[in-house]
Image (cartoon, rainbow, N blue to C red):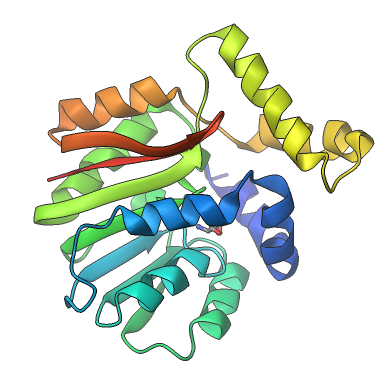
Length: 229
Ligand SMILES: C[S@@+](CC[C@H](N)C(=O)[O-])C[C@H]1O[C@@H](n2cnc3c(N)ncnc32)[C@H](O)[C@@H]1O
């Protein structure tokens, strides 16, 4: 069994309802995506090469193409049903390609000006997996390129982590019953998600050599952060 088998099965199954669900599950998802795209420091008519890691149904790539019309975008995901949804969402845009692949053995065949990811890298299981993947990301960037990630993060101590979970439940409870949250969504996260402390992510990026590391946006346990090469 591969490390990503459960994650793949989950997203193959959820693909058709993903877009509706994510707005109920992730606090201020659209604001978060906006922060991610706003952090990209290129001119809107630049022909930048971009890869969206764990593109899912293509929401981030669509926001990117709306702003950067000449960008060449590669959408990478493990779940073919998610990629199918992305192809439908992005069919009006040119210069978009799709790769069905797993972070664990993805070789980054090209170099990019921009590497972005949203809500995907916390599926990498261990700290070493995450740091190792950040290193591959760094090597796949052209000089002057940027990496930004929007993702679930852990608080720096138990008190903050409990606060983050309470605030997350409070958000979900706007549209989902507390019973469903406790019986479905919290166990699913405990089972499948492997977030790390935000301060650790920033430390790893720094050790790898990223510059101008920053946290652009944060709402308790969800953050947008990254840096430049
Ligand atoms: C929560 S979804 C986020 C989708 C999209 N980025 C968004 O923010 O709407 C996470 C995506 O990451 C993909 N993913 C998770 N682990 C992966 C891996 N090891 N390799 C490639 N894709 C992966 C999943 O298949 C899923 O489509």
